[in-house]
Length: 534
Image 1 (cartoon, rainbow, N blue to C red):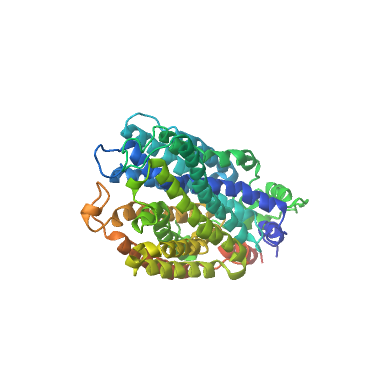
Image 2: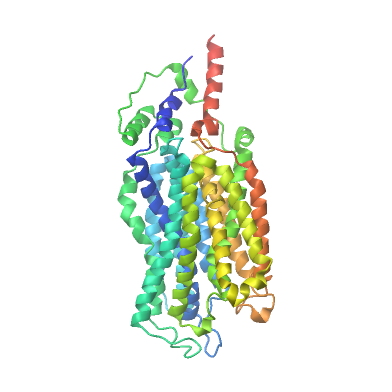
């Protein structure tokens, strides 16, 4: 009985030693995620500055802030675009191939990063409108990078270190968040040194210098640079051999791509009629009963855990400045100038990224192929729950000035365990457990569920975290449930995420074809063919 030939060929990839090519692919794919994180999270740095510039109210005791609907749109519109991009490019990556779509997403991200900073108009309405328009399409490009980068890295990797390589691509997000804060600090420091300005309480108009309008634009536009530096190399990546062999069913080209990756000559064998029949055996569709039977619970597990994780994760990330202000770690807005406020927000977020976010990502890279994805995700959700409740239950204790440092440490630990936990594994696992012909689509569906959760976090937390006393809520916002109760809700969400993790299988140490059941499909078809010829 003949062996399933495409799987035989791909076995060479699974057993290959780690090579320079793997690290090159991590950097090329990872720069996309560096850009993704920079672009998605840098907006949270500049929203207070936008409020001061475009929504100043003469005679107000507080600096201008974005109205609720504008704040929700500016923070959330890129997430809407990301969700759409994940579904569209995920599907397109399975239809046209990973490589053919990969350059489009990066080009879209670069163009829209620059265009976001060039948002035109003189009135607040036109500036915010054009900013939201370009950030939607920026998000659309970012969305495509999720399924394509994960799938490409999974399909290039060997089974021994596959988890670490996929996680390393995603871990570049940590450096992107860190870069966002660092760029804001540098740009703001330069402008503060050149254009001196008093606190709002001293001179409401003079506290926001006209040149501050350049600051937020420079910060947003800088996001195009990392992608531009790697665009050429991204376009030179060959198509993944797994897509070519299992989806396009072009074995000769797959052998050529494997030769490029492994730097060895791989010889083709003569194909038999029986093997041609086997290649056609993997025929069930995404919306078939067979897919539901084999992978339905897996897709539910990856999508639901990512959805719940992103409610908590994006709530924390996008509204760090509000949380820090609420506990007194940042001074009252009226005691600072516009540029002083941006500088202190950027410094606080950079500290959290440096101490909690980045270490969590890279600890996952180090341990994921040793203790497994399932264990890391359980650990992450468990400790996120613990620290969220530890912040929420004695919330008044953390608002006292002498306890601010303790609050920041605890808050940083929730980020650490999000990234040494479900934020990393939710990205890795969907790229491993589904068949090649659905891999990009299913990763896109899982990631889109995550972005739906991010929108719940971005829009919901913005309103929910407002003070229960309407007179103390931000201008234009209704009374909310308060910061303490909002943190309690996020803790409960993490508990649900922990239990839904049990729907997700452990892919550690197995080939993609074994995990997804593609080798079983081939064997079953082979058995049927053999029985017919006896």
